[in-house]
Length: 285
Image (spheres, rainbow, N blue to C red):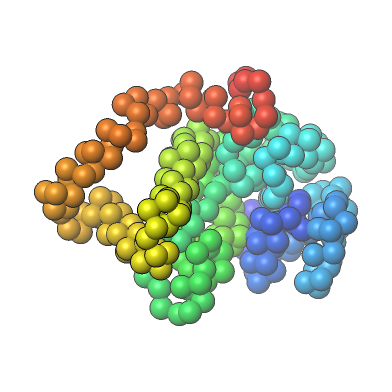
């Protein structure tokens, strides 16, 4: 099948991610059906002028079914949706946790795929106010995306990439990994580590202001500037840190970071992490 005339169903079209992906899909030439069960979500969809379709009708002829629902709902939603899909269709989730944990309903003739946005890089080139304002992505700022598909069919892979590029537009590169590798990136690399460090920076800012008594504008200004310098120096190699800074960094690592912190990248810790996120006793695959 050509990738130019896809039929796409968005399940959960009135949720946070459902609205985001729908706002982009409505700009394409694809045939798109929007399904939403919650009254509040239905109101959000219809307020945009989009027409709601019952789930059975929405997925019946869809080439790609996007499950834009929270992780905790994916098991029940996939159990309802996957049996109703046509043979050869693709079920696409927007986060790897449920797929990695084996919670999704499977059919031998339905292809499972996962994607997740990278969000605009702090180093991405921006030119317009809209690009500067788009920190999440999917509106104006360029971002990459990650995708995984459990199929060797290049046509199906091309279909998924076209949908990924549409729902997260504008997209630069689509990087292909396995489902497990995507789970190692999200949550381990970006939530367990990067987002945690972001929260730690905010706590540090609050500590400097509330405990040390530093004026908030001064503390915020120096933190934001030095955060960019720190990331540029470490991730891009822009400039070397000073000798004094390296000593302070070593002190911080010894005072704050556990020596065995890299264990979070092990399979065992990944399973523990995802089990907590999905409210499971353990991951069984």
